[in-house]
Image (cartoon, rainbow, N blue to C red; front, side, top):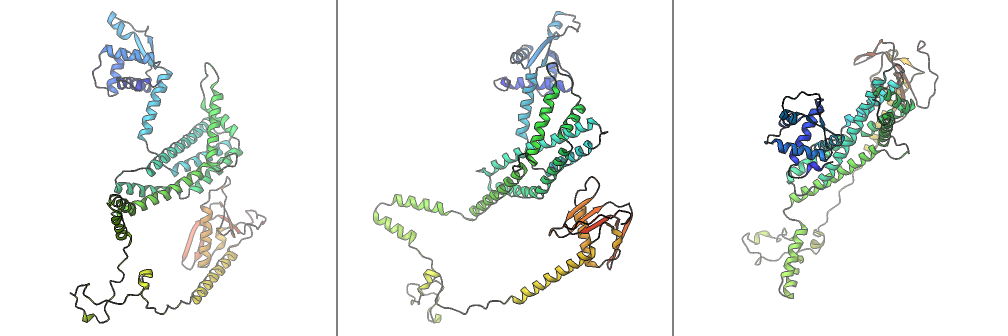
Length: 503
């Protein structure tokens, strides 16, 4: 199938197939000899090709079953020469279309770069939520179900292709050798920052997709595929019904989605494995950056020094020279006594030679520990008892303020936000924190938002109100917003809900 990509005339064969591909995009399925020549020039082939070479190339492609030839009986021919040139028309076969698509795909893979896109994860979750809504509405269009499912599978394929390409590029980057150190260090540092940005909130996005998959499966994946099949409007096949193969592909795509976010066998999702790969890559890249920085800081390494010393040992002529070289290389000690001075420095001129200067007393501990025998009093240990007591008192005070605010905000069933009226500043800040946590959660089908604080002691349930406006007043001013129905309670407290009219 790909024989046309090799040989001396591979460029001409490829240009001819590209010309037929461009004609197919314009819904022209058959081309004559003159039309092929025109399409070749449009495809960028500027070399001169005579009729004999062009016909020989078309015959070779036909022999490889990439082109098919038919006679044009609907045309009127005035001369025999015109009949010979315009009678035969060529078109791509299925093998030719597959070969052209394979080469174009290979070239696009070589030119593309992988990416880790959190927007694709969010798009997958959005399409799943849309399918959940469509399955809950029997009057919704099957065509819309089909297009939404196609968009979901497209996002999933983009996620898989970009992840595999980026992982391959990342592994090649980790193994890269011989590059310019400045460029190498800059690329690795940028890659570390890119991975850190991708890992931010990756767990929450993966969990959101898994929850959306569960919601869709509650309404039936088989029902989803049946409605999408009706919306696909597949043409009838000559040999077999294409519906069964189409459904099999949809089931395989759905299993791939589950393998990434919610495996059926309870194994670890692949999105978490991607999390581990990214973290290991960050650690490896940082280690490589440290080694590059260390190598640039030092003009030579210990390993290089030992190699030079080994060559010196190998070139030593006698055994006495070997002993002398050993003593010179490994018998040296640091000159830690150079800072010691004579008890009366004025007796020794500064221009006096070291060999003629009187000796000074050197402590025996100077060589082993780097210190002389002068000892001083140890410093006093700071008493931090008062600091610890002050911090404990501050923590108790903050805990008491939080408990007091929780008691004030606790409700017996749902109440309107406007019922709080005027609040103390500390209580108002606590209420704003709880409202912010609830508004950050995705609402359920009834519009209710439910969340729990990080310590698990307070649960807030936020429901849409009747469209009124709530006004909360504090000593610093007032806040106006939607008049939600608010219920603040402990997670284990199961109170009976009060009807909305009573609330």
